[in-house]
Amino acid sequence: MESAWLVPAALVVGAVIGAAIAVTIVAAAAAGRRAAALASPSLPAGIDQVIDVLDRAAILLDASSTPVRVSPSTADSGLLVGGVVRPELSELARQVRITGEPVELELVLPRTGRRDPARHLLVRAALVTGRWVLVLAEDRTEAVRLEEVRRDFVANVSHELKTPIGAVGLLAEAIESASDEPEQVKRFTARLSTEAQRLAHLTQEIIDLSRIQGAAPIAQVDRVSIDAVVAASIDRARVAADAKSIAVAAGGDRKLVVLGSEPMLVTAVSNLISNAVQYSPDRSRVGVGVIQRDDMVEISVTDQGVGIGEDEQERVFERFFRADPARARNTGGTGLGLAIVKHVVHNHGGEVRLWSQPGRGSTFTIALPIAASATGAPTGGVAA
Image 1 (spheres, rainbow, N blue to C red):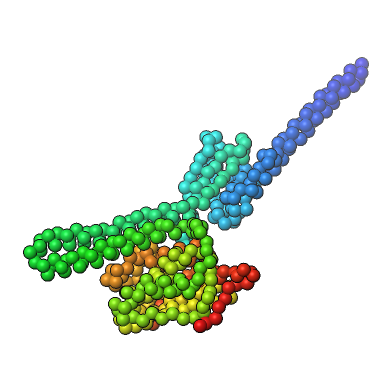
Image 2 (cartoon, rainbow, N blue to C red):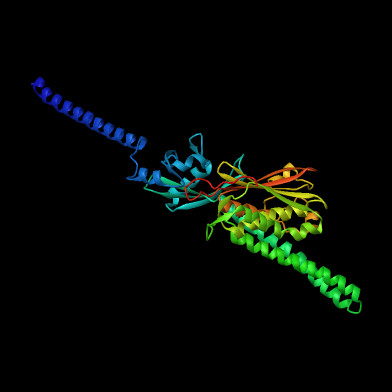
């Protein structure tokens, strides 16, 4: 009897144990699936396509702030170091996961070997789903630089205008005080006229620079004779050159043509010639040479002045920069002439170069694309 009831009992116990084992196996399988899902979760639908077409740095972070997708622009952003996001981004992602709200951060990253010593980024992070965080970075380096340039420009203009305006006021008072002394009145009036001319020149150059800067397209493009540009430019500087007994000589290739604005090109070349005359000693010589080199026209202005040091040559095209401030004020320089030259040449698709050595003078060269003739060949010429 005893063995009779033991058999069913054994069957029941076996069934219970089997069921428990089955449940354990099912639970383990489910846990395994959850672990696999956590280890290699599927990306949100369409996120790959979105990140691939973004024109800015973009990084998709998983729950551990590991980058799983990046946009093509991210490589040069400085946000990844050895494939790992910077600590600032990890903290940003943590804040987003806690609050569930988008967060943004101004990030300044140092860099070397560039014109700007630091990269300025506006970084924004937001949840894509419950676990994914998308980080976008907008490079504001150029905007920050332009804002600094604008502030410097306003400050420099204010400073430059203050000097002649103050001088005009003082001279007006001096003239009033010396009203009974004709010789003194005549002397003060001459100085007043000089300051007024300086103020008018500075104002005109500020207007010219504002009009041409920013690489804006030229309103009307014409075929421009380089012969005419050089002749008009020399004529503008003739009075100043004659006052210092400086000979201005022109030579080189003739009948060359470029596309652009003749008034703007005359402004650029005349600024170079006037600059050469201002910084050259009396009874010296300024040369203006024109040559066709491949598909470019080169206009070179050479003086016999004091020259420019190598450490200052890259800065001479900056607004209001003067290699010799005291001498520039004595010659009436505004510090804007070469900045205007640079912008005019760039707007015409060319470049401006400088060769100079202290004590041996300077040569400024403008290179412009030559215009094609009606047959499609470059318009060339030969030396006269």
